[in-house]
Structures are given as C-alpha cells and as structure tokens.
Image 1 (cartoon, rainbow, N blue to C red):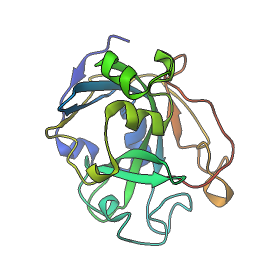
Image 2 (cartoon, rainbow, N blue to C red; image 1 turned 30 degrees about the horizontal axis):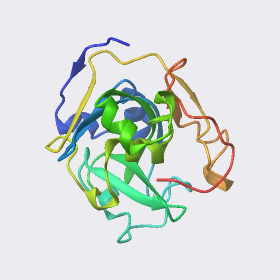
Image 3 (cartoon, helix red, strand yellow; image 1 turned 180 degrees about the horizontal axis):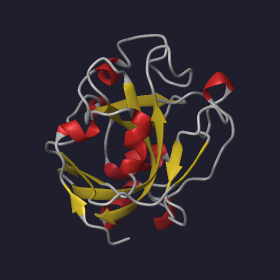
Image 4 (cartoon, rainbow, N blue to C red; image 1 turned 45 degrees about the vertical axis):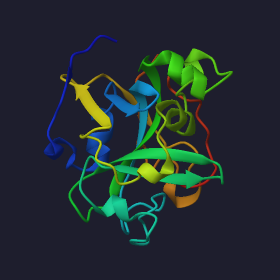
Length: 206
C-alpha cells in the first residue's frame, strides 16, 4: 500500500472503539529505542468496549490496577501480559471513563526491518509482526510501557488520510459470550501478509 499518512490530534481517537478500529488499518506505529526505530503498518485490529458492554473486554467488570489505562485518555498504550509469556498492545479509544481499546493484532514492518529480524530471530519477514505478541516483540515495546502516550516520543502514530477498504468478522481467540457473531469486531485489510490466522476460541483479550 502507498496511501498518504497523516498525524492527527488526540480527538481523532476519542471515539467508540468499534468506529476507531477500522480507521487504524493502514496506520503506521513506530517505536524508538536505543537500538533504533521499528515501524509497523497495521493490517489487523480488534475492538473492545468497556464496563458492562463487552464480556470479552478486560474492563467488563470495572477498573483494576491492570486495566486502569483503558479508563484514561485516548491514544495511550494499554499493554497487558497473557499466557504468562506474551505482551499485547492496544490503543485506548473513546473519552476518559469509556474503558475501551483497540487490540493491534497484526501488521507489516515498514521501517527497521533488520532490527525487527534480530528481535524475532528465525521468523520469516511475513511473520515478524503477524499476531499481537509478535507485533509487540518486533516493535520492542515492553509491558512496562503501558500508559505511554502513542502521540509522543518514543512513539509516533500516523493514520491513512483516506480510510482503507476492509473486511470484518468475529474476534479471534475469544470464547464464550465475548466471541461469535454478536461481536464482529475484528477488522483486517484483505490480502495483507500481516493478517494473522483466525482462531475461533481461546480466552478473552483486551
């Protein structure tokens, strides 16, 4: 893809997560570290709503120490640890108190390819950021970065000037009441190599 990217104000992200999620397709998230910069073009995301609305959301039962970032300002990073080994990254959506977020499920490295290859040793270029945990590793974003402002260094986040065409379906890996056809809140760019394989069931995500 060669779409034009633009920097937008925080208000752009202060909308319902289901509305925001497809607007992040084609967006480029970059992260600078002492090792260098890696940037990833997003090709797959999932929306999660908040308290009492979305059984698949970490915020469904209210605020905890773990999910407090979801209740804050939009365009901040909500990172969480899962399966005892993986960090996953989300963009906080909506207004303070909304407790919603968009999970970054997959993308393609568009800058810092060699550094991403070092971080994901043995992975094919297609798989460097194809999946939420892989994406976090390729970007070099640790769990401790949760709460960071994605619109300020060491991060930057630009979105397509014109929203991309997309497909949508049930969220992947979400079992029980939070999954299935009632929550078609997974969005992806068809044909993009960074789209992860669909998994029907596992456990809840953001």
